[in-house]
Length: 253
Image (cartoon, helix red, strand yellow):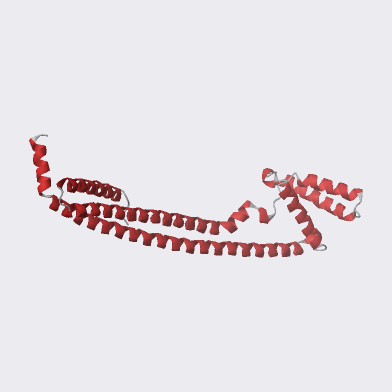
């Protein structure tokens, strides 16, 4: 061992109490700071969770408003059917036609058939459908002519992209989008709270590390055997530096 190394070790041995005291002081201050940061992040976590709960409540309110608006639109739609000249004589017939259309398109995945037709073509098909429905209603039940008319109706229905307004993607988005947006904000706040909780837990763990460093430094300050004191101070220094680096890598509140 060189003279410089021996001189360095001798100085450490002479000042073991000073080194231990410095480690105890710094460790205590930094442990308290880590505990303070843990408490701050815990508060941020609770704040984010509360905001998420409020946002989820707002989202549920908007979903309820959308459901109420849909119910209102449905009632208006039924009233429209009653006032439509085509259905003035037989509203139930028109409603049943609309239900048959809706069921047929639900069964046949209408979204795969939405290929734009020229307005004139669609109007012609609609006129043909009106005529076929009238023919369908004129025939007695369970008659071959009635079954034939119904088959022709289905064939015509397959040529147009009929979408009941309740199943229209644009309509659904308009009713659900306010609630969906608030639900996304609530989910973001929830994730923010989870991250804050994890950061607070990390600061709490660092507090434990600093406490271990304090324990080793405290033992080194009271023992008389120089070798044991050096080992304990070395362990205390390693744990102290490890804790300090871990703390500096975390975000402060």
